[in-house]
Image (cartoon, rainbow, N blue to C red; front, side, top):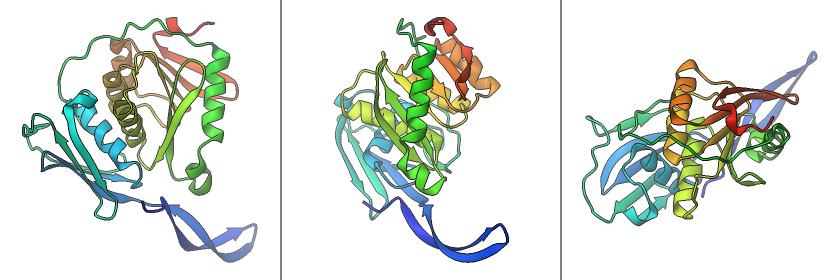
Length: 255
């Protein structure tokens, strides 16, 4: 696996003093995703946790639903390629064009398959929501080093289970979705904690995972709020300085 950063020489200005320093910069790599030998996406990402990224991305499209759908998944970090073979070997038609070219901030449409409203009755206290965000912000080594990534974590109601960093906030959600899928983890009682803006794409991805609560350091778009309300997902956003705002389905916050 390549290192997620590389050193770049930069000119550093600091209060009238100019110097040359070597600065760690996060990588951006174009990774190709192949499904049953057919290229379905090229994703700009940091180039790490490629199997999770591919599995989560295909899960968000509806191309795979459970671990049982996957025959093999093989990542080649040097060739920047991931091959996913499903057990039915059927060709995939995720969109009319069949091919995505994605930047680190791109938006994709899902499979169009209707998703059930999330009815989970798990809940969280305001104190725990703030604690999770503080832990996330202090536990992201790649962001601390480069200040150039987003970070998201998968948690239960007591603790953060795993976190992932990437240049794309949507990639971090796919990595967590892939981690859960490959590890056989049920997401119906889990929580997403994240740093970046909550877009409609992020809302759709979290809905596909069946996760009932999302906590964000940033804020949502209006379209995302509408999706989250329809999905039955609780969004606790703008978590900063011991305060936050609940944008949807506040019944899961134990005020």
